[in-house]
Structure formats: structure tokens, C-alpha cells
Length: 130
Image (tube, rainbow, N blue to C red):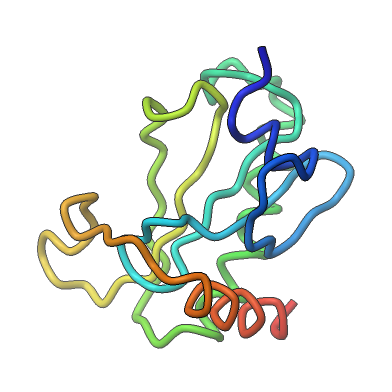
């Protein structure tokens, strides 16, 4: 059965896409820790990030770097935090979250559902830097 993320890739579930190529896909988290919180995933359905072959894992990180650089230009922050938690959806993914460096700010405790309008504006702004 396809994962939620595979359904997003196939367009069966709408998302606020940031970037896509033949192997990877990036889209905004619907319940961001901070505005600009983006998920980066391989298109190939693999549950655990360290089960990804070396070449694809390297490609995923390079793809995530490109997305992170655009987020940093689009969203006021000190850095882009990176987290691989990987328990919520059985499809490997990287969280990219704008952070200011405040202790404890990079936590799902701070996540709040964003409006579709907020997400659309944020996605458009990030894409403008790609």
C-alpha cells in the first residue's frame, strides 16, 4: 500500500510543493514547527533513511541542501535545522526547519497547523529563491 508521501508525489493528495526532480521531492509540512518547515523525501518508497543506497542518500542530502538554501533566503532565521525522525510516516524524510538558535525551539511541541493561505505564500516565497 502506498505511503501518504507516495500519494503526495503522485498528486493524489494536495501539497505545497517546493521542488521536485526525477528522484526527490520537497514540500511544506502542514503542521510546521516554524514557517518554512519543509519535508524532503526520496520518490522511491523506503521506510528507513539509512536503508537508502549511498548514491541516493548523497543525492537526497544535496537536494535538501538546495532547498535549505532557498528556505534560508525566504524565511528570517539564523540557520536551517535538520532532523530525521522518521516514525510518523513509513517513508524516509528529512525535516528542514528555520531556527533562531533558541534552546528547545526545534521541537514538534511547537508545531501548529498552518492555513492554506500561509502555506501557499511561504511556498511561493521559497520557490522564488530556487
